[in-house]
Structures are given as structure tokens and as C-alpha cells.
Image (cartoon, rainbow, N blue to C red; front, side, top):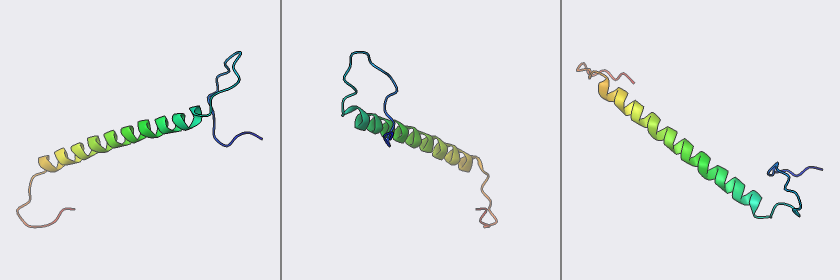
Length: 66
């Protein structure tokens, strides 16, 4: 039966195997990288939305356009 979590697919010759710390550190690294990417994209999207709202002409009739 194969393990549930994937591991590094490299075979290292004359090695007893990958250390036990590798899999948790790999998943933590992936979580950190993906969180950074998501937060960066969120900031870019919010900046674009803010720029669009600033460029929109303000309506003096009092109607809410949202």
C-alpha cells in the first residue's frame, strides 16, 4: 500500500532513505509559499479595485450604484 502523503520522487544512491523531517518541512514550505502568493494576489486585486473606485465619476444624484 502506498503512503497517503507524497514524498520527494528522487532516488539517492547509497542512501537509507529520506529523513523523517523532510515531509513535514516540505509541506510547511508549500503552505508558506502558497500563503505568500495568495496574500500578494489579494493585495494586487484590492489595489486594482481601489484604483477603479477612484477613477469612477461620483454621481451627485444620490443613487447607490453597487
